[in-house]
Length: 101
Image (tube, rainbow, N blue to C red):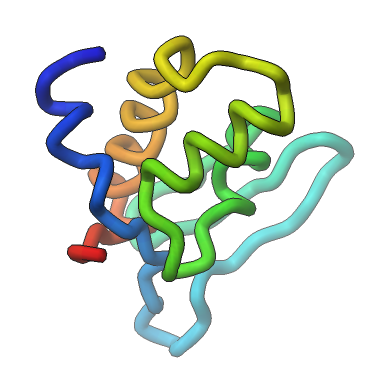
């Protein structure tokens, strides 16, 4: 696990509110979810969609990782960096924000 990943485990990812008051604009196409943020069109595959669906504005990153590891029979250490990298990418594209638990 990367050191910067460990520092983020207690943070709560929250879906940002758009200018229109909508959380985000989206449309589902098969196994993919297309999300339109302020400056980006983001296409989530089934893995990204599973992570995105775990964001409920209350769960910490650690809880999201624990839920995913239990659902898919994976070790938390196997997925931690990938999950945090994905969430960081959503944050950089203004789709979520982090808050302290």
